[in-house]
Image (cartoon, rainbow, N blue to C red):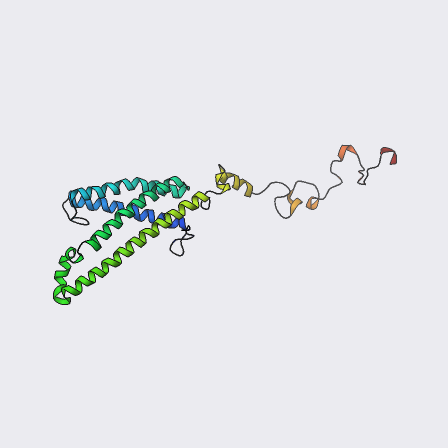
Length: 239
């Protein structure tokens, strides 16, 4: 059973890792669009120029569909909205299947030496065709393993963040749910007026006498001159 990750790349938080994955995926989608436009519109062969027109349009359409999904997921990460990130998780799963099939086909099924024909022809005189073909096949195996491992790890990170938001670990705190919380916090931290303004206490109040001591010239309570502080209080006949 898989458990949610607690950090990304041994140091970054899961939300930060999710944002990094989303940004890299967004750049990759724009790169695919630029490559297909360069191949088909400007006739300048770049990535996937050997594919058929139908395959390039299909790949471009999938990347074009991912741009709003990724932007929505970025907004979901910023506002802790699980639904947006879940939708991106499903899109990333489809991307993983598509990329895994492409890697396996071009690196394992197809003849790597034929795909890298120009490099093999250039290096044959110095290293030999058999050595170069063996090197390219070994590199292709590592490419497939690394590519699939990286994409599985990205899926794990996105799924972990979805679970954290669902469980409330990366959700909004209670104090973040209060409207106009900044004004309330500022008012609670502002200096109080009156006798409790600082450590001196009554020293800065408007009471008569030094340091707030009661003066004999002050107004009396109910016009009296004697105030009994004994308990229980005595009656009028006891004075």
